[in-house]
Length: 200
Length: 200
View 1 (cartoon, rainbow over the protein chains, first blue to last red):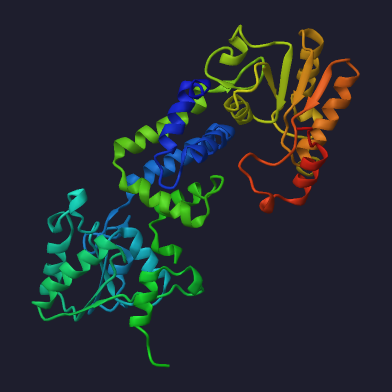
View 2 (cartoon, rainbow over the protein chains, first blue to last red):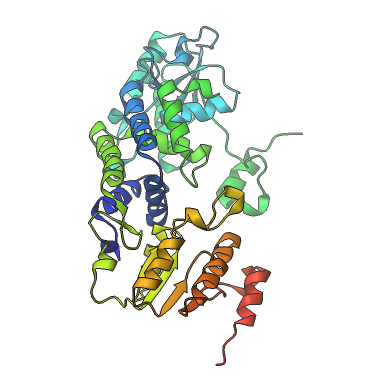
């Protein structure tokens, strides 16, 4: 039935369905929504996309996203520079900051080691991390890569390299999500939550 | 924590969160995804949006979306012009066509009667519908407005006007969705499915 769509609409639906979490049905819904808005709104929308791409770049220190010469976290004199948190992606910095529990600084790796996708340590900012540990007064590196196969492999790899340098290395804890339900927890998470149990 | 985002990224997230079904969290995810793509891809994306808006316009006959002078359905000589289906939005034409069960032509109303939103019959293509019934050889009007309060009110209103013209008017049936489960059906649907039961 795709030939019922005008060609330009078909192309828009195609482009929209590349977005993460957007299937063919939502792409269609988004396309019809966009067509229902006026031209000025659509110009604003596409300008917001292109402008963000033009302005936002990785912070030269940590690799987080910024539109200034240095990101606000690296530029903040109140942050504890002895504590360095390693994350995979710029968005992970935002997630960590949202927890309001980390006062240190960051290093974004740009991904995780994944031989299947051809991503090895040299594709990531691991050399940069090691250099920072050598040159800065870092006492502890908190490895906050994702709790999946690639993230764990990356965490182990980094921990191995960092231990040679005599810096403390820690990994964020596994366990049950707050507000979660035992019934819905998967076995692996539950096993780790049990293993990491704390005296009350 | 919003001040952690660069301004241009914040603006992009704002724009994205206006999309239907996109909450603040998915807007963020979409924004980071867009930033991770290269400039050429983003230009293609925003061009697809603006191009669709430029090219696509309502068919002068039925009001469905097209990028030609007349939409492919109105232009198709094999369609049964005695049968006219009334829908609310251009996207509803696509839904109907997907069912492959309707061989007639369409009239898009542009919405449904909704006094709460200030939408009365004069904001919709109801005069156009009446004119078509007068001028064309229409024998039956199938009212396929949405099965909600506004859609039902609109269907009743249209049926009243059309009956004076001596044309047959029908309404698409209510009932249980195919593949649905009695357990999850709401009472109103179930009541209608029961009332509309058919001999086996």
